[in-house]
Amino acid sequence: MGEIQLLCIPRALIQKWFEGIHKSPEAAHPGLTKLYRASLLKYYVPNLKQTLAYYLKRCDECQRLKTYPNKKPGELLHHPVGNIGDTYVFDTLGPIVGENNTRLYVHVAVENSTRLS
Image 1: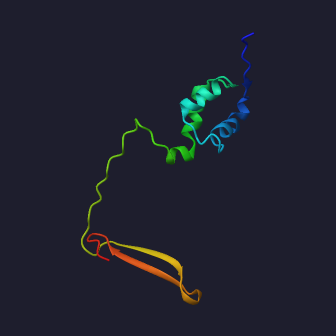
Image 2: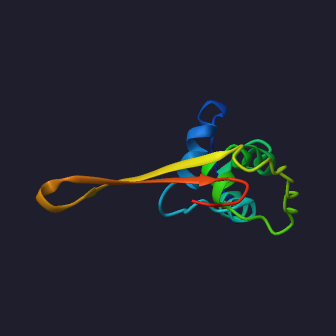
Image 3: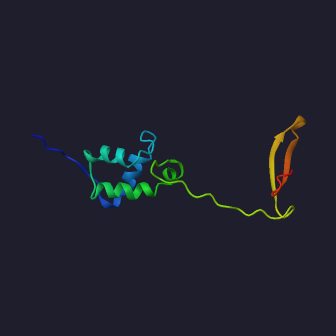
């Protein structure tokens, strides 16, 4: 009575297990605390918290999209401004389908130091 049975995850399957509990649409990429609490009473994984932290740091989507409240913002970098006419930036928008299925494009050229277009 009062015995807890945990599903033991073999080392060879830990990455697939992590992807299942973290990347599934139902899970929605939870953080370390939520994953740890949800896994603690269901699964046995050696060094559970460290294992979860290891795989969380390697989750590409979390690294790109999650915000971390204790993380300091990066420093703003100074980009030197050259002389007028030194640098131009070009961009193209399109295709835009016009009358008679013609394809139209908008080309933009901006002189970088003055922002003249």
